[in-house]
Length: 151
Length: 151
Image (cartoon, rainbow over all chains, first blue to last red; front, side):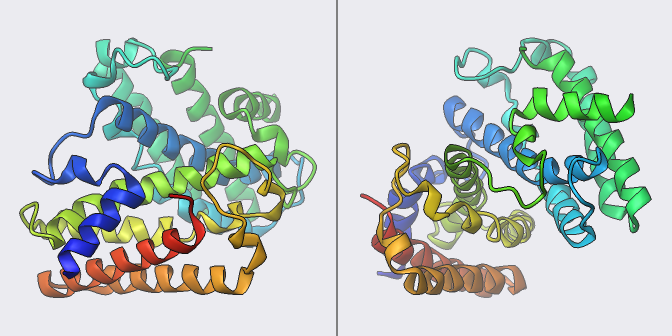
């Protein structure tokens, strides 16, 4: 009964639960992968936006918000990458460029630059360090989008 | 120059950077709030799905995956709620019911049940505890969706 309820709950409420039914490692469908990776990017934007605004002097510095967001970003920065599976190559609803699947080493390098910059932001403890790390992170975002994302 | 690059990067790559320009506390637009909260739900589904499948016996138990996902879920569980702002009441692209804004105390209670269940899952250290906590979490998801989300 409990299992049945849980099953119904996951399937009904999320609509993707069924994708995991046969194996934990079962690959989600390409459109689900795209939706998941875009969701990670949306949340990265949600939490980086205010920190970037502080770093640009467009918003007053708020250390508590900056540090909370940096911690969130550290977790979120791990979430998009498994969504860039070659099975998603022909999906329409995405700005991801074929270069991602044609030059995996370079894409991995861009990911690492990004996750490294996020880790540096999350480790920053004062205003100057946070603003400096936010600048580096912004550049890492831009560099990867430049090479691997349609304008 | 650095500030300019960062600014351009946030605006161009995320498209929502401008929303934060005047104040860190500036409220994002209703459609952005909906997109952000749906993104959090999508990722909660991504990482709860496999754990739920394990708890249901539909996938082999993998402690490392379960514990990694539980830790991700603990962070993600904090992200949807500020998106349920009354300004989003008239948005079309959402299954959120008016009950959310009509009975805020009950909605908050449902949130707390959910975040409490996630915290319990994240604190679980062995297979039995993880599976038990996953069952409770599934029920918390279902109860909230039942009351506050269109079928």
